[in-house]
Length: 273
Ligand code: ZN
Ligand code: FE
Ligand code: FE
Ligand code: ZN
Image 1 (tube, rainbow, N blue to C red):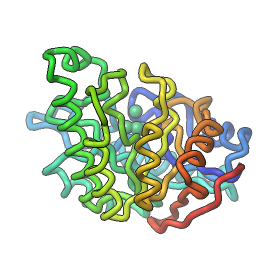
Image 2: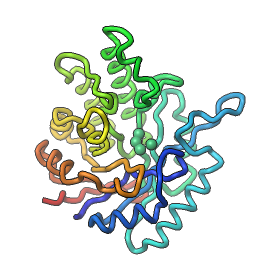
Image 3: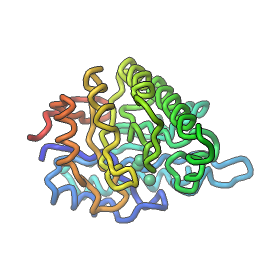
């Protein structure tokens, strides 16, 4: 299958299992022709020295990450193993991403919106009650999320944007036509030239759907935004998971190609049938 999986985690983030070599083995067994690791980016410690949160490597572990991927790459050669990072887009913290961008020869940097405010990561089940805290809560959370998503696109810091409608993870959606949220975000994405992830991870979350929804994907295709199909694997057996469903959704939206990245240069490769 001429496809890559560019959103793979490592045990350094504290909530993924399996060594990179095991991810490579599954990718090969499933017929992928390229993979890339993109663990959660380190963030500077909080004032007082506490870690930023409990689901990422510490800044001091970044060299270990480079070593792990370098070793996986050497062992897998000539099978391509790319070096990426899933960066948290947080307004005001752009200089940190710029600093990270200079620390390695990245093949790609992923922009992810998880944080809507300090200590408010929208996909963390510990905040689930916020979605039902008031009648307008879901509308408010969606407004904040999509505003951040558009800012993330406009930042110009990233090669593609992860799990576009992550805010639906637990199944909460405002009433009515959701294009009022999608359209400004897609306009910002198209204007910036950044690509977008079609992620199979959502199929295994309460929402039970691909990220993004079919409606969203049809709009991004119409806007000329390229896609990348990824699993967001946190365990080896998740590499390339449900890619048949992602390919079908991409084709239904009009896509005939997906993007590849090397040293932050993008090219398009035809989708498998
Ligand atoms: Zn994760
Ligand atoms: Fe993420
Ligand atoms: Fe991820
Ligand atoms: Zn992710």
